[in-house]
Image (cartoon, rainbow, N blue to C red; front, side, top):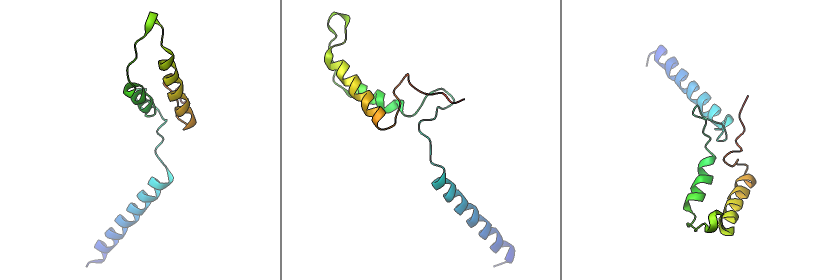
Length: 92
C-alpha cells in the first residue's frame, strides 16, 4: 500500500474520531428555537393535550377536568425542564 494512501486513511480515521468526540461533547439542545420560531419541546405538550379524551365545555367555560389536565401537563413539562407553549424563552 502506498505511503500517501496510508496517510489519507489515517487522516480519515482522525477526522472520524474528532466527529465522534464532538457528537459526545456537544449534545443537541432540544429547547433551542429553529429558524421558524418553533421549539422541539412544545410537541410533547401538544401531543399530550391532543391524546386526552374530549370533554364538553358547558356554558362556554372549561370544565374542571380540562383545567386539571392542562395543569397536570404543564406541571409535568416544568418538572422535566421543558417549557410550556407560550413560555418559550428567546435567545438574544
